[in-house]
Length: 248
Ligand SMILES: NC(=O)c1ccc[n+]([C@@H]2O[C@H](COP(=O)([O-])OP(=O)(O)OC[C@H]3O[C@@H](n4cnc5c(N)ncnc54)[C@H](O)[C@@H]3O)[C@@H](O)[C@H]2O)c1
Image 1 (cartoon, protein in one colour):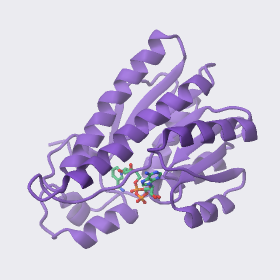
Image 2 (cartoon, rainbow, N blue to C red):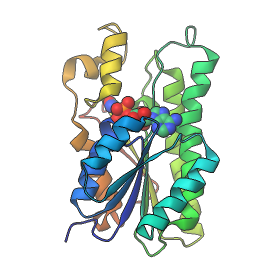
Image 3 (cartoon, rainbow, N blue to C red):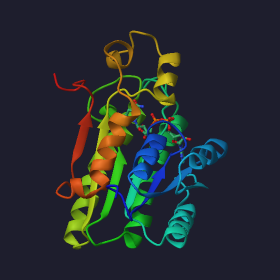
Image 4 (cartoon, protein in one colour):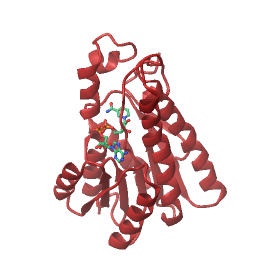
């Protein structure tokens, strides 16, 4: 019996990086996993490698698409216990360089996408105490990094929204826990993009460049903790996993 035995998890942005690792770990612990992403080929490939998982195409900005993936999850697996709002992207540029389109894109995917996910899932989530929503924030939402103003706004927004939704669920007596995770630099295609596009001395990115990054499993372990019974007393919190990047 795994820690997620009998549970069903939906993971956005699950075709790559952290989301794919979350999918692998939750499935290894017994969950049925629905992976959604806009990268179809990669999503199908990741799902094919994980027994008990399926891939569905979905852009998290699409509200009607949210209704479909939640309905499909329940029709295929009978319930929904865990939602990981993980999909994200980054466009680099200071307040003076970043275009308004790129600003809006990041807010749209990460803030609006997370809102739509919570809104679509909560009415259908198990309210027997196994319901858990995990929103992917970032240390970028906590510390100042000059080249990511929109990403920082989105991630700080996710931390605040997580608390609001957690309080709502408690007020309603739903027994759905809602938490966020704020990773520091983790080795994924997103940080490979940062290393390729940014100068070595870019302010605030010293951990990515110099202090060693974490691995996706370092975040997946916390996703599992929050999703399973181990995390039953945690809600409304933001868990920073950054090897001390924001401590001083
Ligand atoms: N890697 C890090 O160091 C790090 C640190 C802090 C936070 N995060 C956050 O963790 C999450 C996962 O990042 P990652 O590092 O695995 O990056 P990644 O680029 O490997 O994966 C992100 C996935 O999200 C998908 N995605 C993007 N826009 C989407 C949309 N509109 N609809 C559906 N899917 C979409 C992409 O296709 C991709 O598969 C992101 O929210 C990211 O901001 C990552």
